[in-house]
Length: 114
Length: 109
Image (cartoon, rainbow over all chains, first blue to last red; front, side, top):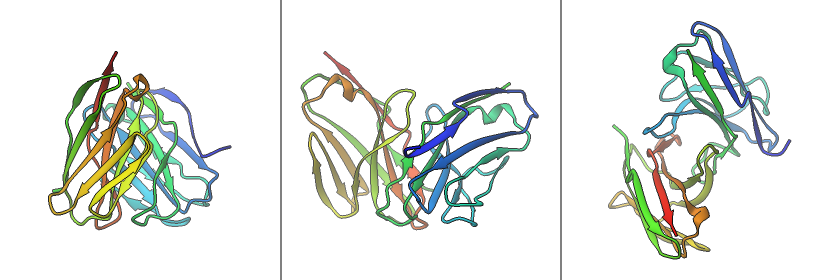
């Protein structure tokens, strides 16, 4: 693994179903993030984790949950998917959450909820 | 509220120079980032400014004026591969990145 990987690449999901998007990084970064990207809007932060064992809510956390059991993995779960959660989801990581630290992005998961 | 503004779309000619502007209003400032995003791909880091002035990196330069809440990304000697969206983002007082909607740059031969 080099950098950040996400799975699946794309998914079509029936409304009401539960779904977990996976994110793994091998850079030993402390901070990790989940964003959604919708046409005409900037990236919006869903949840973040500054270090393993801690998580926080971003701008649009409703309907999503995360966990950070270890440094490398940061899964995002949709407990009961709704059509408004159709989006492209990006996972990102940075060394720390500090000012100069650059965020590096995974390739994204394209999710369609019908 | 927090706001990042940048033009939705710009068109430029191969070999020319283009300037993409970004204005911001955020609660606190801990640096401004520019990312490039090709269609269907992830954003990739281009530049970071935290002090006023110009940062040059090859064909790309980024400028910051904190007093004006303003930045621009300057792309020189445009190539067809520069066709992409350019995202401006500011780290606020909580060290969270606030993102603009991006500027789609179209390069014509």
